[in-house]
Length: 483
Image 1 (cartoon, rainbow, N blue to C red):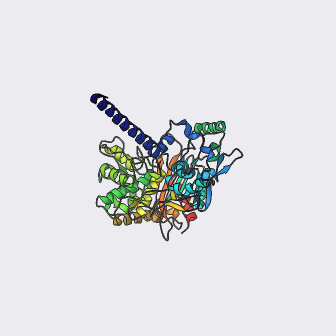
Image 2 (image 1 turned 180 degrees about the vertical axis):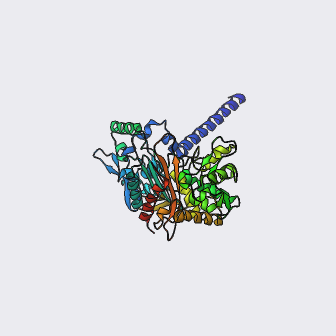
Image 3 (image 1 turned 90 degrees about the horizontal axis):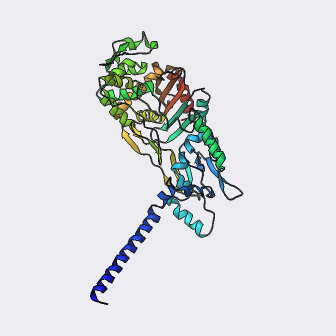
């Protein structure tokens, strides 16, 4: 060949070699690093074809199986759920179409494809043994979860939810919701039956497939005053500081005044100035509306709410996110005043309000909620343990101590005094009006047990009446957790 042709052929070989190497690198990257993402892509119709041919591992709590797989005659595996409506907010479902709850969060650990199971499952594969998925251990206290669900279901509330956190670790001990559903109904292998079940549940006005504990938001009423009081402490006030009260308060530029509840007439809320602890215990609307509108003002309340998690979707398991609670950032005093008494555009999930109580109990530290305790290989070996993780410091230790005393005063002499002598040591009631409805969103947040308060509870029931009516449910749940 001529020298010019030799050079051209040489360059062609170099280019070809580079392209071949690039192609191999791309294939290696896709297969090695993107394979799982491609399998999970919502546009990949093949991802659901063989999902029931896998012996999916169980979801357990306190030694009880909450979800497990059973082999059928055609070598497929049917998913089953124990006390399905009770534990649905925890387990979720595993259907021919999708998965939710822990079934979704730990999908690849349950189906055995998680990298943490590679060593354990490789040996079984090599010797031809059956390869099941791993076991997910939830943090839930099964006895307290059952008590919570039964209490909510028997309350005749339109919608209701309860969340309990271990304040020191963030472990989710209770996450109950009504109305609920049975995951067995939607997890059937029969595609037509599953479709009918989903269509029926989605037609229901109160959306039972959506957890009221994490997935829906409600005006928190006076429980939000906990955050306003915390912002006042952050601005330099103390529980003994004299604060504005009075029967009525009109925010600057507002056309309508904010009043105290009719039941407060003649009480300490009528006085012009009272201690902050007393205003909190008696839940004086005028005090906290003034704080949100003027001093310490919207910015301080908004910042404090953010420290507790408002504005964020709270992740409580891998990929499981709550709806984002909200307090308005506004330069309009009237809107801030209304939001500061838990009305207007202020909304929260029961999980979020449990985090508020937990931060107070845990000396001002807000822990990241987590629903998974540990993950085990099919042979029982623990391959991962979820460690407690601090989310933020919302209060100093001294401020948290003052907030605990203020919450105790609510139970001792305030709006929750009917809970004196129960397992609830401190708390806050809240009653949120729902415009045009004959019911209220009735809240109670608190902590217990009395001897060693380490559990933070939030209960919301939607029915006529006041927040204190959710208090006895909270006490029942704390009783079930014991000491």
